[in-house]
Amino acid sequence: MLRLKRLAVFCLFAICVITGLLFWVLRAPGAAGFGDLAAPPQSGAKLATLSGARAVDITDSTMDAEWLDRTAADTGIPARALQAYAMAAELANTAAPACRIGWNTVAAVGFVESAHGSHGGGSLSGTGQVSGQIIGPSLDGGSFAAIPDTDDGVLDGDALWDRAVGPMQFIPSTWELAGRDGNGDGYADPLNIDDAALSAASYLCGGGRDLTTARGWTDAVLSYNQSDSYVRQVREQANAYAVEARAAG
Image 1: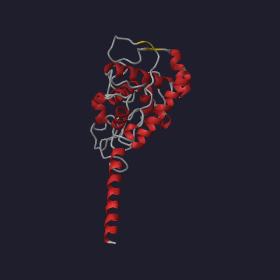
Image 2: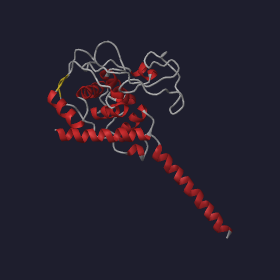
Image 3: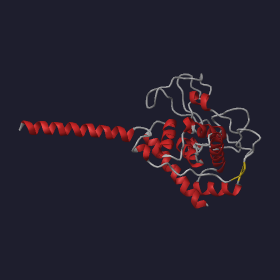
Image 4: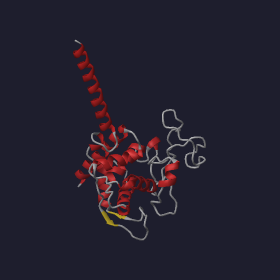
């Protein structure tokens, strides 16, 4: 009887250890399991020319107008936002050829973060500016991580706690490091879709990641938001955009 009890205890211990190991393996970013879910196809845009006049310039670059209109209609992405996403991916890949990010991944982040700048009833102007301030909740340690103010409230209007800003929802401290001038006006503005999209694409491409691989894509999105549910949302949306874009032809 004692042997049976010892055997039962040993088996229970072994099950706990194996379960714990499986949980760790499946949850570890970039590891087997969650990180091994296939990366969405990385969609490319149809470009007429890419101006070399400036190293960073989205709005002056020429995109195939027919492709833009057709893809915007089939995906439901506003054409002005799609233009920014597609050119952001192109420019990020020019700067980091190993990244191979697709516009559909940038667009998926934009959808999850602010519904392409339409959060709160907003819209994008012809120059890519959001019509209203897209400001996230206070990062005061309540429902979200505690991040004390880093910009004296200049970007987010909060001098006590940081808040995510703009269509791609950058917090001020991250924008200070990752903000890019995507429209060539000499100023990186998180409330401008060209600037925000290029900054997001470049940020996702950081660390030498290859976004056509499961690990590279998952780690990139986790670097943007360390949430498994967020990664699932972005993956589903990026996959949907890739399918819809292929259907558009």
